[in-house]
Length: 372
Image 1 (tube, one colour):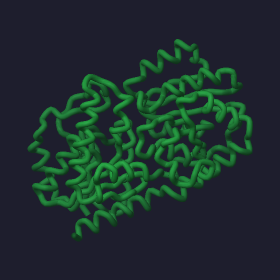
Image 2: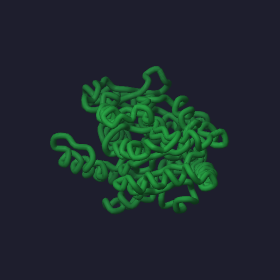
Image 3: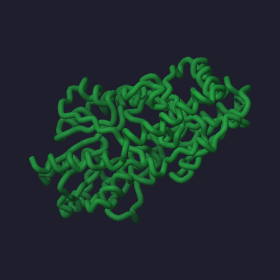
């Protein structure tokens, strides 16, 4: 099968979609399929990765925008490749290119809904942001209606799309490489209690709440916070750490690669993820696979699976800092409770989110659409 992925970002750009596609590409190629990536970011030296000419996006320099909005050379290349299926990962520039290619060359098209922009409109602000998010959401729905099928990673995302008027929606959870993200909690102790966040540093991710929690827990012996990632709020978070004199317990790591991420999770005790804008939250799943209980917001998309303690996920209201701090104090004091959550976290990720089963589901979906 010859599969074309159209995406705004690809590895090594530091976001969940780019890493997801890198892993899917490797797994599909190991099974004998040919995978072609069409993206605005990525490594041009990687086989079958095609990038048009771009410039950095001012607000988010790790992302890029095209110079030519009608890339004729890209369409010529797509035509020559004779793709069997097109899978778009967003509804913006590259997603639109993928859609036009599917129409022009009569190729079946499927989409994945990765980012719920409707949840971000109240937390990311710039001139005319409300109008921009409203138009983006409308265009999302418009383009997804043109696709044969729309995949979404969680029950909450499924409901969002259904409420948006889409009927051809299928829930397909993402995956974690449980062979790489392994449980090492047995080597940890509660004398050194490290709470970690890995992700984009932006308002919609709730990173400011972590600083407030750290401020309230500075008296707790052995407590430490690690915040890893890049984004538009990096300076703001750094200023908050300095203004509150938290440099002795809060470490800002900046961007970390995959190996460093695995190392950090292997030496951490608890993962914290206050975001309210995720459709899945792959970093949380990586933490669970590493044996870390995860503290997430009450509307986190994985909460629908089996409750809280049964999967190592703790939900809290991050607008109530005291509630989050009380739960952390309980985890540090009650080792038996912590170990129960840690074991549940690893078991949950291994049993529910296998990479091979996810990729096989993709193949089955592609095959059914090609056969129609």
